[in-house]
Length: 370
Image 1 (tube, rainbow, N blue to C red):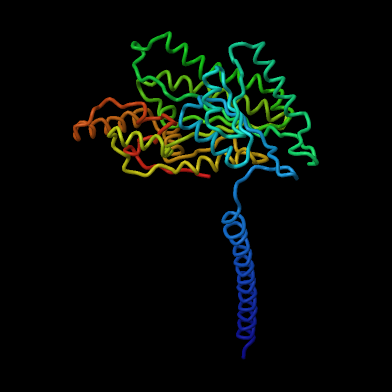
Image 2: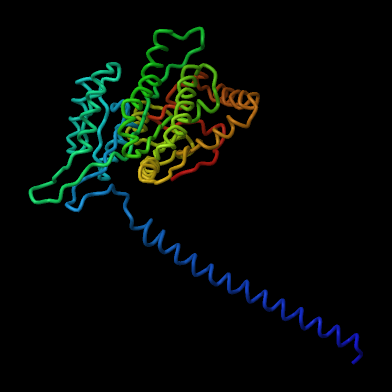
């Protein structure tokens, strides 16, 4: 064997050895990853996600300790279902009420831990007085039964659910008095509610949630100027509020809703003969789980997209040129004419969070669910 052949064989053996070592290393890493993946899967799917129930914290005596306040029209299916679900999960739920009629409707639900919280938003003095009583309720000791260990309540969440029933009209047909009422009810009242609760929010590091429809505001559709104005104002408000509350350890999350299937409302639409969407809406429990997870999270995201089409239309609205949106709308109107459907689109077909949003003809989109 010549020196050249010997050198070649030596280099080949070294290369084979290195290759074998690298291969064994990757096999070892892959083996460890398989074990870790199996353990993680069993913990999350089999041990936690599969068996864990989303329930609020309780004291040692079994009493409820977590308090959630919902500010919204309790008569709306969205706010109503959300309040009842949170109460079932073990929260003490207070619903902001501004009239005796609203208080009576809330008490008529016959839920021991679903209570009205009278906050006259337009009367600053009376509102501050009520919130002072609320803070006292949170700060004092509570005893579930005689001999039980005392406990305090924890204000974990303020959930803002503005009314989404918006009139559809061109700018010249807008009723200015009605616009003023809608802006006051949805924007100013929301800001005032947060302002009244700010001392309690700062003290308890409360998570603030805002739930709004996503489709119509994202696409900035014609004849929906009032709706786009309201949700644009609310979006800017929560963005600034999030930066402000971050300095004190509290958080704000904007839940942008797509197509959510609320059974009570879809049943009503079916009885009225409205045609169901060809694509299935996101189940209501996905929204309920997302709200619960956000309330209990230590560092929740500032924005979450819940429901079919929410993320897709948000991306389209931010990135697509207006001409593309106009073309998409033109295709839908042409399809409506071809199928002899009315061209006028109702609010309950667009972005009313109380119903399934039926913009699926434009495109399925991708959703980010809890």
